[in-house]
Length: 88
Image (cartoon, rainbow, N blue to C red; front, top):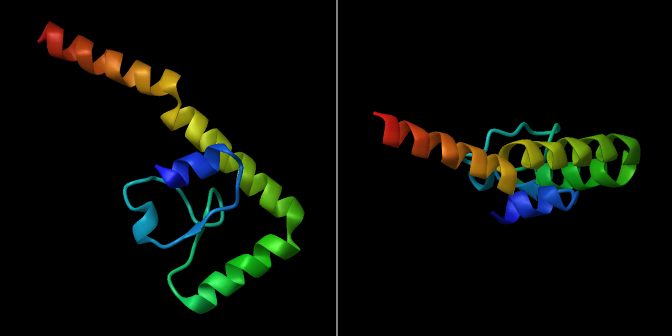
């Protein structure tokens, strides 16, 4: 949940592969995944040196959360489940 909140706030997120387990996001497209100290340092350098690219990644992350985890989307999914349960 913390990762999704950060993505929705357009914050650059660096986490481990375990941290994003179960979330269908892509490294360097929505978020930064690093499992070693060297990888963390590389991701931090990338964030600091590539402002234009980072803005694209932050926008991708925001849109991912909006399209998959917004209250509206979650409500639609729940409604679909309820309809299936009541019509079977």
